[in-house]
Each structure stands twice: as C-alpha cells, then as structure tokens.
Image (cartoon, rainbow, N blue to C red):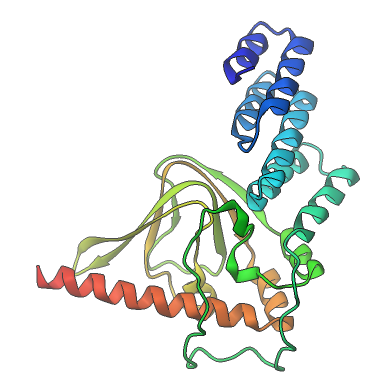
Length: 270
C-alpha cells in the first residue's frame, strides 16, 4: 500500500476505502510516518477531520516507535488542533513526554549560573540519530519536567522563505526544527553572510532567550518547515528548577558565537 493508493481513494471520495488504505499504509510503515501526515492533510482538505485524526494518530505512533519523539509530539499537537478537548490525546502527549525521562540531574544550585561562566563539556552537536530521542538540552530531566515543557510548545507550520527570526528584532522564544531546513544569515557591513544551515532536531533562538538582546541573525525556512516554539515564560520556569538547562544553552551560545566570529573574520578578509 502506498500514499498514492490512499490519495486516489480520497479523490474518489470513497471514504471507508480511503481510511482502510491509510490504515494498511500505517501497518506497513516501519519508521516513517510522513506519508500518513500527507494523507491526513488530504482528508482535512476534503473536510474529513475524523479520518485526518486517525492518520495523525498512526503517524505519531510510528514516529514514537522509531524514536523520533519530537515528530511524534508534533503529530499529536496536530490532533489537538482538531480536537482540543480530547483527554485521551492529552494523555498520549504526556506519555510521549515521559519517554524523555532519564536519571535526574544533580541537585541544582539556588540560581542559574551567569553567562560569564565558561561552557560545560557537553556535546550539543545536532544529531538526527533517532536513538538519541530528544535534544541533549533536555536529556536527564525527570519525566514531569519535560511534560511541563511539552504542553506550552506551539507547533508552527511555515511556508518556503518564511522569516522565523529577523536580525535586529526583539524575540525571546526558542525554536526546535521538526521538519525541513532553515538558513542562518547575518549582515556584515551591509553584506549578507551565510552562517549555517540547520536541519531536523537543531534548535535556535537561544541568544535572544539568554541575553534579551535583539536577534543577531536572520533565520529563513527552506521549503516547508515545522518548528516547535518554546515560550520564554515556560522555559524560564523550568530553568528556575533545573539550572542545568541554562548551562547547556550557554554552552551552545558560546560555541555558536565563536563560529560566527570565525565566519565574519573570513568574510572581512575576502
């Protein structure tokens, strides 16, 4: 069974057969729930929200089994958009968040460390290995901590060329890239300088969150992308309880700042 099989049945408006084809597609899928997401979108365009919810549910299950926790969370949030009062789905979201639980970090100090301290020896390099599960930023937190964070996450689906962050503008949200790619650029003496291309599981916006200063780069979507946006208040509340998150953010901030300085130096030499 393929996505095209389901698509053709949806186009013919043979709903029962289309849903059965989608169910078989889910049963045959091993690691990738993306075809189910596309099928759900077709059902939505046809005004069939219940069938779309079923496809989103199957997609979330596939992503969760394969270790793509953020994608599973995003698919579950799509269900809540269609049925925000569904208690079963909210329970499912809590269970997904609990999958990130691990040994709790050492007892935190009363206040989060200042930015003047040096970076911690932690690997914050982006990873697309599903075995990693969730961003290193949140690894080791107890289940209830991540559950508190997942709830306020806002899923944003963006078109090609959307400016998610604009250099010079104020913003304090943190973003996690769920699907697609984004370009990171900054301006040096009126010239646009490409800094990086970020992909799934990368996160950005930490500088504005940590410093409260205007954004230092423009980040623009390449094709359609999905991001989870973390509200500053929710993340601050969690950091107050687990300052290790601020330490890890600071480590990434310093590493990226050093990378930016080096790129700018090379640009000025040319």
